[in-house]
Image 1: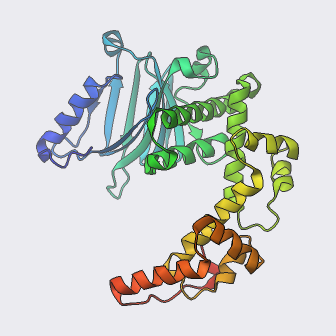
Image 2: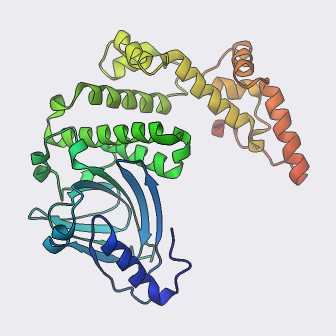
Image 3: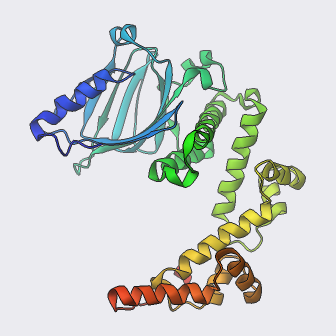
Length: 340
């Protein structure tokens, strides 16, 4: 949803009416009432939502009057992507920049603002909204968390930020239907719970299933970051997360996966992506394979053909044929060190 079809002078009023009519109603104020361009991308997960927003500097306020008119009993987790933010709830007034989460809840009054940078770029944020009753920690602990900036660059904050980006960038990659939405909601709740527990030092109070799902997400994130490492294997992964190799295998088995097959699938996907890109046409197939953990060409070719029904060379040949047919120009290849 964007304000593109709304006349510039009516955009602020249009957005203000939408905010005042939303389940978590707020009043809007801004110095940009002459033209208030808005871009919103909303992902509905059923019980929870993820919303990416972009707009000029503005202030929002939720009062006791708003709450009396209607309160969904929600927690909002806002990640500032661009701009400077400020917030006040539960007697705590904070300011922070991009790269921080802020938790706030709908049942108490709050005031917040976002200011765009000196270059005039709009403010940008991703906001997760989920019911308080789903939280895997006592609601009475929220007062220790609301209106307190939390980093998105380390620990569970980094995992939560990565998850929010991936879902809002392409929710379709996770499947469709209520089953996929429920799984994404569970993952969101688990990550928010662990982010909270990390700062409350109460991780041991989270449900066992929540801790297991989040551990699996941490493991999978670790694997993706180290796919090129020839020493990546179940033993090294387990050691990095201070668990036994046997327990690591059990985590994957509960998802219908094996550790080694999942790693191989990811590596094959990276190889396929490179081989299907004309920009890497001059890089030998063997170099691509070795770069992504396949030092033996014959083993790589067999695994690739079993997965994609074509050999690596055939995928590259088809890609180049399509590319030449479309443009008639063959792009030069990058350095081998840039493969993938």
